[in-house]
Length: 221
Image 1 (cartoon, rainbow, N blue to C red):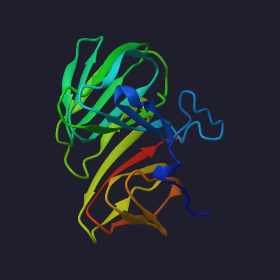
Image 2 (cartoon, rainbow, N blue to C red; image 1 turned 90 degrees about the vertical axis):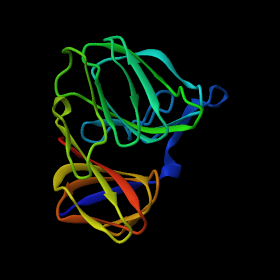
Image 3 (cartoon, helix red, strand yellow; image 1 turned 45 degrees about the vertical axis):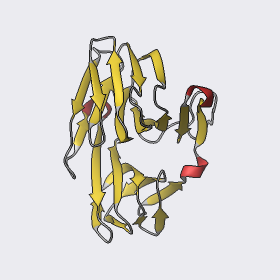
Image 4 (cartoon, one colour; image 1 turned 120 degrees about the vertical axis):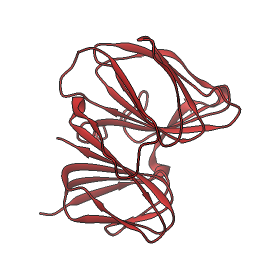
């Protein structure tokens, strides 16, 4: 039957956060008070949030469980602290993963004097429970896949010059998020914050019309 692609525009995201506290959140899936029974998940992916924190703003300590949380900083620097004792600074090009497993608490803040923007993806694990884990991969190289085996998922980062093409992995479910720049994917033109949910992807290519950065999630059912 061929690939089926569902394009979701940045402007269609649910707006959340707390503006007076310096927090803006843009949700691609049903999230918190923005309940949409027809937009609960795509494959293992249950959230893809763009978070914008003003200098000094952040999320105070809060709990997570049974979720794989992967964070990608677009600009600025994110401070992370969690109840298992990890504390780190996450910068553009780093991949951070928090496996909340049976339960963990963490803090996310912008402790700098510059704005912070990051994209955070939540994935449902294949099996609930287990022991929380944390990992940060500094400066991940272009086209180097990052595996999240607990969710049966793989992240591919693509950084493209204008006019450059890249193959999109074949797969049952693919989620393509444009971090910045503009790309053409199949017959769709995508800009910053736009995403494509692709089912049964095969032999697809993305072409950058400007310098661009893509996050491509390869997901199980």
